[in-house]
Length: 92
Length: 206
Image (cartoon, rainbow over all chains, first blue to last red; front, side, top):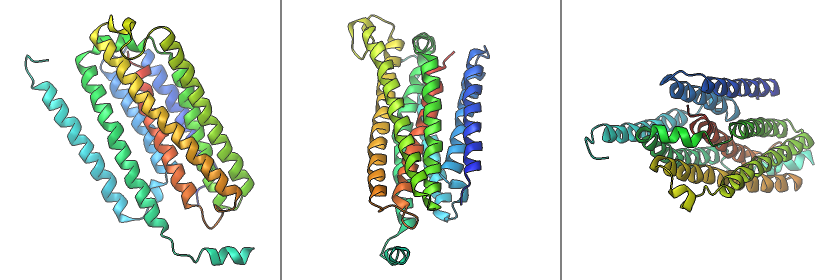
């Protein structure tokens, strides 16, 4: 069973990452800013998914199938949208 | 009382099925918000400068504060479930109430934020907003739709958690029967995750 201590440590991690994303946004890093913001947000959701939502201790095989499957579908949507935007040519 | 509980747990129920169903719902929600995030990125890609200017008008401190509120509410939610599983009923209820209070706090902040923007004449289709650049109109449109839909999810979450609290008072949720609370927790964490992405994308564009 999950320990309170683990939850508190995860919370501390989430607060630190919030501070990180806030301070990075203040720096002038050009194109890296978005990348870092998304990487930090991804790490934070990873913490929430694995510890608060217990995905880490999920033993059922189907979870290892449906979650990557949905992520893959989402990725295809992103790629198709940006492929469309990139190859539209002159039309806005 | 202890024996009665054991008998109750003999009833037909499928905890794994309930959890799996909840996860399917959560994944469908991720795709719902995912579609909006794609729309956001497409418009931002086309109107980078306008998005930057419009984003500067949002209160970064308020957004950061609301992030901390939701993250903390996720902690109290997870701890509430851990407490009920250990049979610490009172502690679990206090933590659940804390989660609800934090959710209401979040919505109150959001309300102030929206109120201030609307007072400045910035709301969808407002005359002031329509005089601005196209990208800024898009940014605020997305801002209202995405934070609005998220806020609606917080509101629904608060109602569900209120229902769970009632079930707990009636002892329908306890050490041997906690899956409804667990699933409500999953929903609450989902709402947190969505905000984790909304926060940098709306408040922290440089």
